[in-house]
Amino acid sequence: MSVLPDPEYRVLVVCTGNICRSPMAEVVLAERFDDAGLSQRIRVDSAGISDEEHGNPIDPRAQRELRERGYPVPHHTARQVRVEDAERYDLFLAMTGQHVRGLRRVGIPEEQIRLYTSYGPTATSADV
Image (cartoon, rainbow, N blue to C red; front, side, top):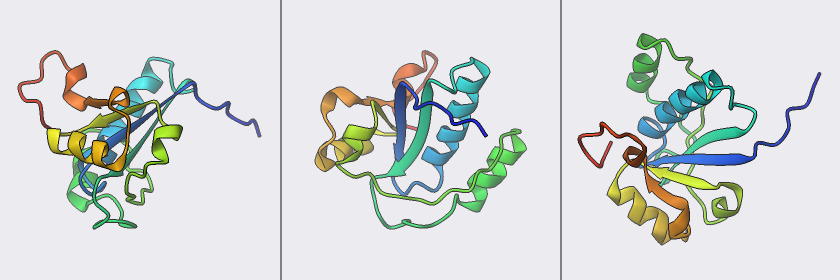
């Protein structure tokens, strides 16, 4: 069995509870990076600002949406963002302005935080 090298860049996608938006975005981004031949260099994970869903799987509605669009539904356990994540991840992609503020409150440095939609030139809203 071969051991995969550590990725050069780590992205954490962040929403409220880590059971709908952020795990779905994690799956889609990871597949896009894989399609581009970047899966060995970029790792995508997800977390939530709140701990209310801690330990829960992806919401059944989000699972259904992923399946209907041809994406795999991974084993997932919701978790909360921690200040230590600033050392583990290079980029935090927040789903909304509220999540940006939550990341700041946790202690994530401003230069590591971006809105998810800031990378979508056709986005019609700042929030997902």
